[in-house]
Length: 263
Image (cartoon, rainbow, N blue to C red; front, side):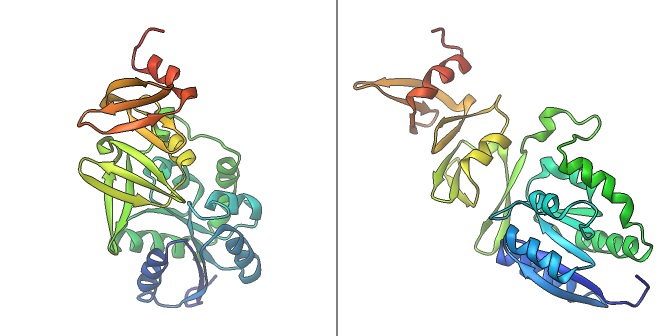
């Protein structure tokens, strides 16, 4: 690609506000054409194959297929240059190795500008091909050298409220409750809604600090005050502050071990 040639960009993100933000930022860049906008994994795969964009802003968490699953299906050699976008900072180190850059939501104008300039320069200098090996390693599940298992766990979660994005430190979360395709985060007297599955959250929260007591509930272990065996074989926990949550029978004994109860 030579200087002055139009850079053809695909935006793949399942949040409308996130897509609009990228569009607004790209509108200030010269010689840029947004050739497509997608909001899930399968349509992103189709758009990449049909449109052959020069650059893609690729959200990691999308319906249908994640950003990494999209890249895996397209194949490292065939993937266009990527700037990953993610609300989960635990993944940044890996994405940084396998992409031109990453944007950790919520990002400011300056961070976007840095990532976009870097992408444009690498594309113009034909340096993108050297990322293929790193992308193949990432898609194969390789872990960055020196990266500890602890770094894989979430430290903060971005939540959207009234058109604004708020960062919630994971260490402040008391418990999480499933609500259809969403999860409710309870932080003191505040409640936040995110679109994420409980299974995914269970995998990304440090098991030394959080435990899934029921298919619809995850609690912070150090907030558990009392384990309750109710008449009729029902189990529950009471948290500091008085909140009571149901515990499934299959998880109660494991929970007892985690909190130090001898059985």
